[in-house]
Length: 166
Image 1 (cartoon, rainbow, N blue to C red):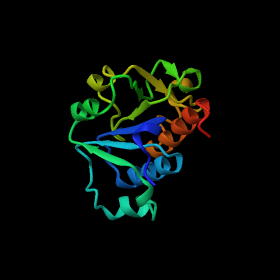
Image 2: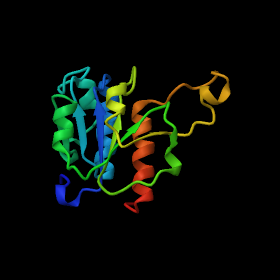
Image 3: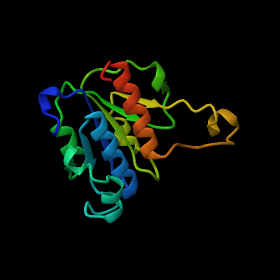
Image 4: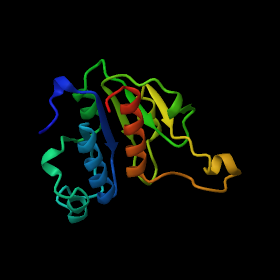
C-alpha cells in the first residue's frame, strides 16, 4: 500500500536524524498521512535499530521511505517543480501564515542543531511553528524547541489540512 509517485501530495524529509525513536515515530506519522519520507544520511543510527523498529510498530509495510546518501542526492531525486520548505525555530515566517502547495517537501533538521546554514539557503522558504510559551517570546525563559517527531506531526497535519488532503 505504498504511495504512488503520481498521487504525491506532500513529502517529508529528515536531514541527518540522530534519534531512532523520533525517526520511527515520524515514519509512522508519514504512513498515517500517506506522505513519503526521505532520510538524508548520515543517520545517527542503523536502520536495523530496535528502537526505530519498535517505534514504527507493525506499520513498516505501509511506509514509503527513501534513504539518500547526502543532501545533493536528495535534491537530485525530487522534481525541479517541488519546493523545499525548511522548518526551523529561528525562521521569520510563521507556519500558520504560509500557503502550502501540492508536492511541497517539508525538510526538518537534526535534533541537536537543526538545519545548517547551507541547507537553509537551499530551501524556498523557512517556517517556524508558533510557540507562545517559547523562549524567544519570554526573555529566553521557556521552551526552546519542540521534539522533532512532534514538529513533523504538527507541520504535516497543518499542511495537509490547508491543502484539503484530510
